[in-house]
Image 1: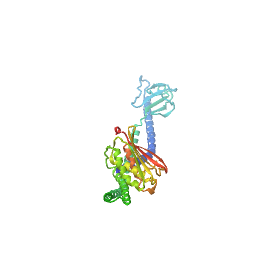
Image 2: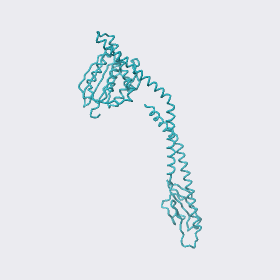
Image 3: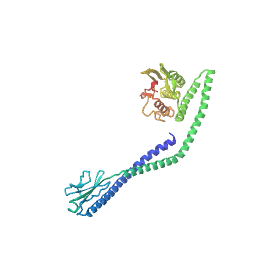
Image 4: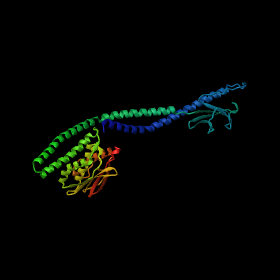
Length: 385
């Protein structure tokens, strides 16, 4: 994973965590602001009710007409002792007939008790308006957004600064591994070439066969490491591959490795449609599967490799008669090895898993402990690619 992606990912996780923690005080702030807003609204209703009472006090009884005060956002009305309207602009159905301030959802109203028969026979003055918390919602969301932005920015900044020494160390380590891989490849190629030249000029002997087999095992490990280092940076182009021919070449390549343990490889290869896949990725799948089959087989045993078409799909199977698998759910984990005495780094099957997932290849594993294991790869039809 790239350093920038890593820091951004964990900064986002940290931001969500801190923002979640801050939601509690933010909720209390929201509740408090709603309460303050409600108190302010009550004061406004009382202020408007005093204006209406004052207007009624100033009314001269000898006048024939009283102009009842009207407000744009406030509704009011006069009610008798039974809370029947004498005059009312309120369309809302009032539920609580009791002196004081009341809130019903977003409806707020104030009931003011009037002197008996002093104001047009009214006993109560009711003031009503609608509460709106839109400004509070907007303010709370703005605060939350500001908190998230500040935390995320600081998180990215600190994570990148804290990680900088480790990034430098990782870069140095990556460069060292890349340089080492390059240095290993050159002598390894020289060894293989010189063994081949020796075998052409001289009679084959078991010592050279063992050296050749060991060099091929080392080459397979080198190819795994090389793929692991480069696969995130390279784009693997796909092509049509004759899998029967390709498989035959890889079996031939590993035949000397199998002979080291006196293991014979039996094949039953039928014609299959060409598969659409990258050649290097296919080689990693086949090489690692054969290599593991040889590594975990008993000496003087056999490995069966089959290739056939079924339901329009190419099936490739590898079966060994060796130690088997104890924990099938762990074998694809990077650096996991069931038997450390067998050598290797535990990266081969992890690479296989990533490749078959990328290429939509199905894998069925059957294994009996101390009896053997079968890997069956089912390739997708070409039309689905």
